[in-house]
Length: 145
Image 1: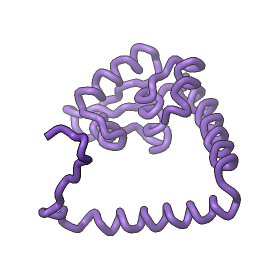
Image 2 (image 1 turned 180 degrees about the vertical axis):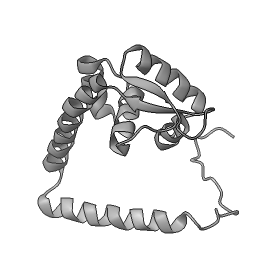
Image 3 (image 1 turned 120 degrees about the horizontal axis):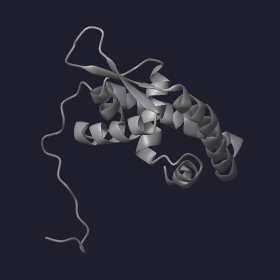
């Protein structure tokens, strides 16, 4: 994440959270409820409201009435935000590819992809399993008591 923060801030005056909001909505391909965006970014709905207020003031998102529930809103990106995302995301992805290519051989990259796929499959399978009740936290000797 830190790899992209300076570029995003310098070039587009976007915080990491603001970049995340635009990427989530653009990636969905349709307007989303604020709670859905918050869930995908793992932030509180209160934080999301403040974030959306700031993005709306900048003309990067717009709040739309929900077609089925008058109590809800949908959030969509504006054409200006789409232009930013269309410039920003390819640059960030290219930078990530450069970092991975510099660190790992082609064989290691393929192995990493296989291992990540295995982890993803295990995580999907674990969603329906109950959380372990007897899990304990291990602390190092220098930790507070």
